[in-house]
Structures are given as structure tokens and as C-alpha cells.
Length: 578
Image (cartoon, one colour):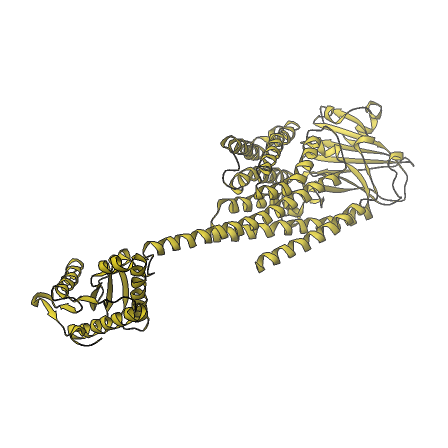
């Protein structure tokens, strides 16, 4: 429990840092302008140089929508007056999606034109934190008349619909604050992975491994999509980074379904509900494969297919969580806590992925936050479920131990029973076996009642337990009725006879003292057999034969079987005062 409390405190502390840096990141976006909604657009079947695009300025359409512009070669034109930014160095930032190259031309008010060209490798090298690239646009100090931005073979519309012009100082602040923020997100997600794996190694419950796999997908998505991947692996291409991001997210959300089915308490989901969860999770896993295989050959279309695949999962998961909450599932509370915020963000992200509307790039940060919260909250659920299952397992083990104890324990005296005695014989004990029997015990029950008889048996059982505790014998058992078995750790028949005789004497005295109202003294007969050289069957038979011999000789005595020489009659207290 101390480890769990430390885990909770660490997560809460890191979450606080994440919230702090989230606020700083939002405040850093204080000097930027979205491009697409202010731009006029020119599409062409072949690539155009900057001079050609500027020459065809009159052909730019200023009323095109995002979904209508899906050409292989696109130029955007933004009037300098639309860039209402401080007179500082400017940068162009946009979605970190694959493309062939970007051309930028800036026409200043004084008539000068500056143009640059960036190929895919240069765009990849210009990464900035938060799934973005950041390219130099214009130096400060000169009034801008118009900006022309050309994109060759963009893979998705997001690369120009999410485009922004931002001041250099703001870009630097964002790069720092966002990098720290995403590093915290990754740290927050890594902790549940390690915690769930530790639980799995200890308890071996499948949902713990599935949670670790889901959180690992979230970690990889945050690491790749936030561009931290580009810092540690600078040679990563635009395509590899995008596919790693898309595939890991699809895998993570897909694993949520498998995790949820395994995580909730038994009986909380019907067979149809489990199949529904598995089905939508399977679709998302297939979506992962789709992005890693044929998506590259489907520009503009693949992104829509990818985002559309999430819609059934969001609906099905929401319905299933609602149903298990109605069934009072404790695990469902953690699923709801982790999925509620994420599902709302997911709906917005699906809509924007399908180009239904456009929002600032900062809205993507909410998805990272939601996924991190999901990993953390469900990790708390795993910890809670771990405690519950461990308690249930410990209770089950205790019940099994108790059942096993009861199976080999006599209920009346608390001594091991005949079953335990039979098991002990299989271990081939050494020494002497004594069968102890109360003489005419049935008559005692008839005259004084069964309750008195049971108390007599308890008294004898307590005496035998005390004798064992003092080391005067090895093991004691109640066989059935008024018969008990005792093992003596002796190798000599005479010593075995002395031990048995002392035990008989103590039994008579103890029972007489405990039940003075019984007029007829209760006596004891004991048959002893030496274990050396005898198998289980012969040993048992020899001890019972010796007991029968003691009974035939008048009871209240012992008899010792010494093998082929027959029973040996030992001196007994029947001839002496007790």
C-alpha cells in the first residue's frame, strides 16, 4: 500500500506540472495568424515555380473550402494586410504531414521578392514541438505585400488547413514550453506502463498486460506525434513519423476495448457486448495495419478512412461503459473516468480529421492530455482491481487452507482425523504405533448421555495433544468413535510399552478427575506395534491385533506386537491402584 500511495503522489505531482505547462503553452500562442481561412488558392496539375504562381495571381480563388481543395499541387496566397502581426521575424508553421516540397515566396511592399524552397528532408529537419514544422518566412523590418506558399504532393489537406504564420519569439516560446509539456505527458504515461507490468508479473492477470500495451501505444503516439521522436531520431522521415503516430494511436484505442472486456468484473458484460467491443477494437487494429501498408498510396482519402474508423469505437465504448455503470461495476467507474473526457475530444478530432471544420492546432493538445488522463485513471483502476483481486485471492487461499484443514481434522477433538492418519502411514513413519481405545465407552454414552461422552473424548484428545507438545509422542490422531492413534519415537518394544503404559495411566487419571460423577472408572486399552520392517497394511493390522489382544486379556491394559513372536503382554496399572 505504501508503494501505491507513492505512485498516486508521483502521478498527481506530474499532472500538476503538466497543467502548469499546458497553461504556459496556451499563453505562448499570443502572436500567430491562421493562413487557410485568409488565403486564396490556386491548384494546378503540374508544379509551379514561385514566379509562375505570382504571375498567375489573378487566377487564385478566394472562396474554396477545405474539402474542395485536394490537388497534387497547390498555392496559397495571403494578403500582407491579413498578417496583423508585430514587425518581427516571422515563421510558417503547419501540420507535420508528408509532402514532396514547400515553396515560399514573400513579396514586400517595396516590390522586392524573396523565395525559398524546402524539400521533404528539410521540412522534417525543421520540426517543432506539437506535431508541427516551423520554416522561416520573412525577416522583420519590411512591410509585406503578399505571401505565396506552394505545396507539392501533400498527403492530406491538414498540411495547409492547419497552417499558421507566427512571430519568431512566439515560436521559440512555444517550442520550449510544448517540448517540456510533452515530455511530462510521456513521463506520466510511462509510469502506468511500468506499474501495470509489475502487477502482471506478480498476479498474471491478462487485463494488466493489456493495460500496459494500451498505455504503451499512447506513449508511442505522444512521443511520435509531439515530434519528440524527431529530437531523438533526427533522420526520421515525414512518412515514418506520421505512420508511427497514426498507427500507435489506433493500436492504443483498439487495445482499450480488449482491456475493458478483460478488466470489468465477471458477468458485467453479456456475450454480445463483449463481441461488440472486440469487433470495434479489431477494426482499429486493422486500421493500424492499413496505415502501415496501403495508406501511403491513398493521399487525401487515407486520412479520412483512418479517422472514420474511430467513430464506431467511440459509440460502442460509450454505450458499454454506460451499461456496466448501471450494473454497479466498480471497474466501470475507472473506465468512465478515463474515457469520458477522451471520448469528447475524440469526437472533435474525428470531425476535424474528416475536414468537417477547422480549429487552431492548439486543440490537438487536448487529445494528448485526454489520452494521458485515460492511461493514468485506468492505471488507478488497475491498482484498485489489483487490491480487490489480491484480497479475493488471499480469501480463496485461506478458504482452501481451511477446507484442507477441515478435511484432515476431527471436528470434535480438533486432532488430525483418519484421513490424516492414512496419509501419515504412507510416509512410512519410524518407531511405534499405538492404537488407544476407551473401554466400554458405549456404556458410558448410554448411562450418562452423549454430551458427557463427547466431553470424555475431548478430554482424552486434549491430553494427547499435550503429550505431543511435551515431546512424549510424535503425532496423535482421532480415528473414529473412541479410538485414537499415537506414534512414539522409540525403536525398542520395551520402551514403547513403557510410553504406552504411562499414557494409559495419565488418561485414566485425567478422565477420572474431569468426570467425578461417573461412578464406574473409565479405563483405557492400548495396542502397540513396532514400525520397523513392516509395510503399511501389516503395521496397521499388527496394532489393531495388539489392541484386540489387550481387550481379550480383560481390558485396561496394553499389548505390544513384536512381529512374528506374537503380542507381548506388558505390566499394566490394572493390577495397581490408580
